[in-house]
Image 1 (cartoon, rainbow, N blue to C red):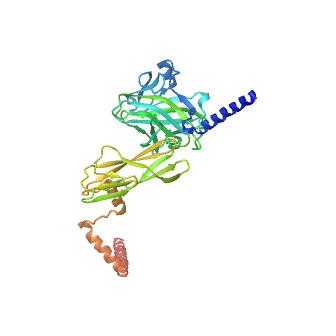
Image 2: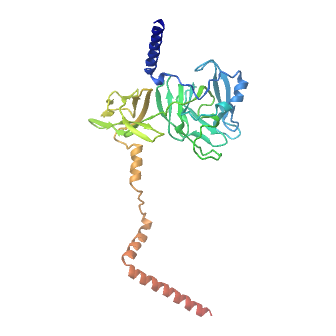
Image 3: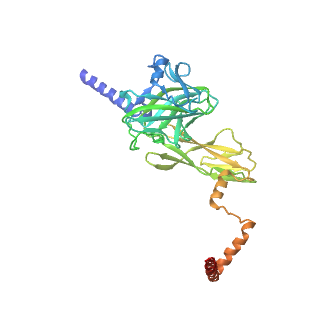
Length: 391
């Protein structure tokens, strides 16, 4: 009887554990990254310089270990932007890392993530690329999306700028780059099939366009390749420029769409709408995405904010709108009008006689042909007469 009661108790405990696990959200269960470098294994600056080598033909960079601004552990990678390259004036610099054999299979990954600390007052233009073993390079596309991620996992969707990741001044946090935002760059000289093969990755590189950031130092920590599901994107559809009405109120409807770049699908979703500070308090947006611009607004722009909440995290997308005062045409409208209306060339006064002659010749084609042939025959006769006199 004792054994039976003991078995029943054990069975109840096991069932309780199963029910408990069943109700734990999957996104809260930690997932081990496919590749991870937290810079804790390097003993000194000599070690880190061997592991993360500066490209000698690029801008002058210097890499060191530091233990002040770190995300985890006791060490992080400091990258000092020194100057342009004095030999070729290159403003693009990079450091590359050759992967150990045991860390070259990224086939289960969907994204690259790293922590960055930009202490500069200027925007930092970062990039990232990796190379397939015996094959082509993959670099950030000239356009597309990447994400800034908070410690809680919330994502702020950002636009890639000419193959660069614009990291705002004083930003400290994660940068997430989905693999769908990579392409084979024009500078890749390796022959390949232009099909991403993540099973054999040889190396990766962190690049920077120094711009106004020389000299400057930024920090990288916790570089990882993770196998989370595809990161969905959030898009806002609506006009990008609005003329402030001289009276009354102007309304524009904005709509949020959730997209899957891998599946090339998109669906309309409900989002939480707001306006980013600072903005004119006269401007309003309701919970349906209806923006109201009343007369008297002084701002030259306003930024919409749409937030979509899923089971995994929140995705935020910002959308900038240019506001006009009604007295000048916006750049976008000028461009559209120029495309719609072909350029007209007005004849000058010097061209008026030839224009009149063309009109007369078109209207009197038969007479024009007779006169032309007669003129040619007369010229030939005169030439023949002149030739006989010479003889």
